[in-house]
Image (cartoon, rainbow, N blue to C red; front, side, top):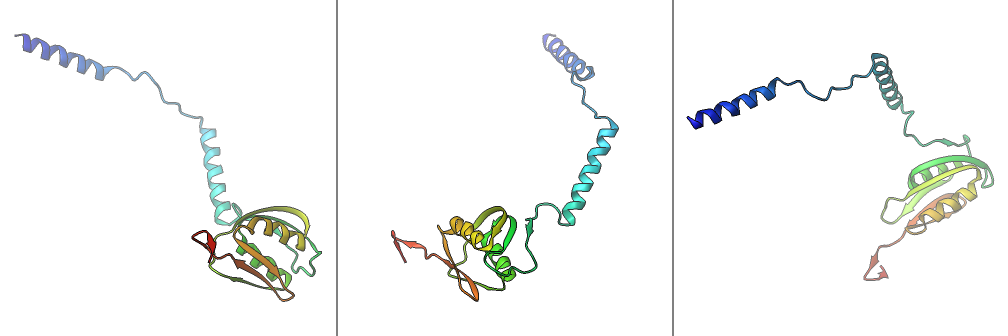
Length: 152
C-alpha cells in the first residue's frame, strides 16, 4: 500500500512539472533588424567573393624608377611575397638563397622611398634572413639553422 502511494505521488509530481509553462521566454528581434542583419551578411559575403575584404592595400606606381621614388604601402604578410612584388616593380630580379622560412612582416608607410622601405623590411627580417640589393637583383639570404649552439 505504501509503495503505491509513493509511486502515485512521484508520478503526480512528474506529470505536474510537464504542464508548467517555461519561465524564460525567448527574445525575438524585430523583423526590420533581422532583415538588416541578413542584408549585411549578404553584402559581406559578396565583398569577400569579389576579393575586397582582407586584402593587402598597396599603392605602387606602375614602375619604380629609382631608389628615391616615394611609394605608399600597407602590408601584413610574408616578406617574400612583398619583396617579389616590389622587385618586379623596380625592374629587378628577385631571388632567395637557403631554406625558405616564413618571414611575417607588417609595413604601414606613406610616401616612403624605395630605399627606406627596404630598410624597414630589413629591420623586421634580420633575425632570420639578410637582404641585399644589387644593380640587377634583389636577393634574400636565409640564415643557416643553428647546430649545437654554433652556426652550421
